[in-house]
Length: 252
Image (cartoon, rainbow, N blue to C red; front, top):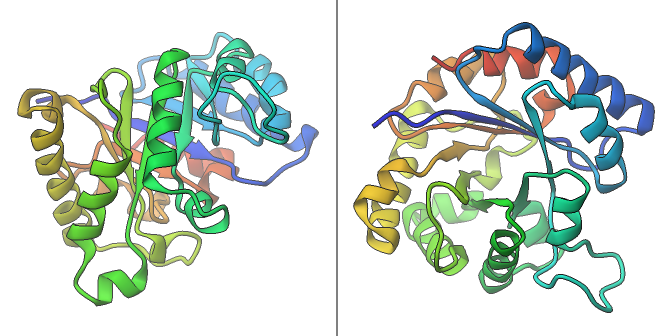
């Protein structure tokens, strides 16, 4: 089954206003020049840049997302952002359960699931992240950990339209290390098999699963060509127009 690849850029806590606008405009210009590109492109800047970035990519076909959201639509939650507000300022998606959120902020599967429910209610695409640490991989727990996180984080009603899964081996994020194609495919295939159990085989075959561990221009083609890899959640390479574009151009 053909799944349209998604190339999503997670800018993390990088860039000031001028940097973000210039980066967004550069990506948008390339996308406008090649409207038949065979993938969807999404960029997720820091929260204060969202409005400016939405304006910078308007009409280009590049969409914008948040890096997190709260599980409620409003209330006394200082420092948090509601999915309804993300939608209102022009976002179409939100990253949830990134390993840095799980590690730095102690987010649990249950919290990620609640956020995904709220994101769906607001009309946002939920990009649900899962992945094992180096210690878990070395202990032979890779498949078990990813299946457990997926089961605990995936909300009821999740389908191929409102949800994307991002597999991010924690040991390969920002380290320059990357899973071998064989390692990536093994985990992606296991994730899809578990999705079949959770949401049915037909829907599992349509849901996109992104690779999120140091994808860059040099390895993108090999990874994206794998049977169960449907694009990438890009970190460092998303901060350079030419690198991010080069990754997108590897989508057949």
